[in-house]
Image (cartoon, rainbow, N blue to C red; front, side, top):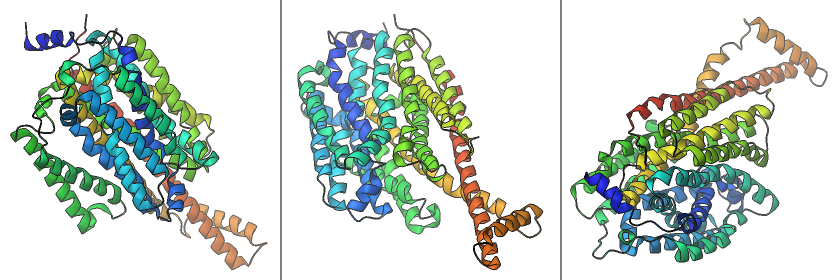
Length: 519
């Protein structure tokens, strides 16, 4: 009998009698945490106004949350051993809930940023621990169904977040987007302490020491990396000396962190999971998908509001079909994930995801709302159909004892993937719009008969209201405004196409994954 087979048999000893009951608090906790990652986006202008903050300053309300959660995510294995996983999970929920209450009561930007750091620190352990607990609570042959249910929270919550946040902000006030976490968080913490499955290997261990060196390099790496992603585009990236320094410090800290984790004992994370081929390839695919998910969540509302004239709530509502698509896919996965090759499901999902991105890349400003809803539905369907099985595939060959550690590393890298996607799409929009504007502006000259004809027609219509010279100037300004709008539209289209192609290009990687059917 191989060591891996022995580990699987050993894992089967520690399974709860009713895993669905045990995981009720898990599902509630993961939904409120993931929801909070996007629900504040649409309320950001309102919060900035309340705190008399600029747009750039208000962005720290979002980034401070991501930084804090990113630091805690890879540390979940250590804290689970130090406190015991069940205790740490309940502590995380309570800290997240209490910080949510404080966020709603914040009086200035400084307080809000500090409370968001506490909220991110509390919530950072929720997703990887929830993922590990869900995987461990079920035998391997039923993990596909379990991950389908888990995927409903992870995939649908970020999509519902902007809609719910817009509705709450418009009908109540922005503090309520944080206050709604309080009753749900308290309920989740109470039933987690009562129902959560607590196998012997996840209980508190004696003699666990904090890896201070690794923790220092982790904080330095993620903080500088987040600043680089947030401020890089506004500072023209590497053309700014301070951005180059920030990036250099981030990369050196990253290398130092991984070297310290590889060479030393009693570290925050165990890098031995990278010896597992499924884990490495599956995690890379998830990082790309996370980048596409967060980039699309950022780019589509911007397109609808700036180009189509939608309100914040209407643009958020236009994202709802994506949630319905994800819900449909997770239901499908729940029934067939354990019966078919999961690699096939992921490939089909990526095709839907990439196809929807390419479809968005051929829209124009004369579209109806149905032209947004249909590809959104298929994009959500593709996300649900691919995300759930790939999580299962990437962790299928990981033992239960390594599950918490592997989930922490995986979610850290996915968090970074989301940050890269958001930053990359902002840069794409800026640079592609400049490129298209440069290519088009040469056609606005007196040698272009079409341009002259339109200037004369517009100026003639305006001449009855003002002097002819002023009318000509206004006509030229109007034509240039149309050029700016068109170049921005093409920038959006290019970004959609690139993210669609990214999903299709990673499909061949699925052939490198091992797939084993569990009896």
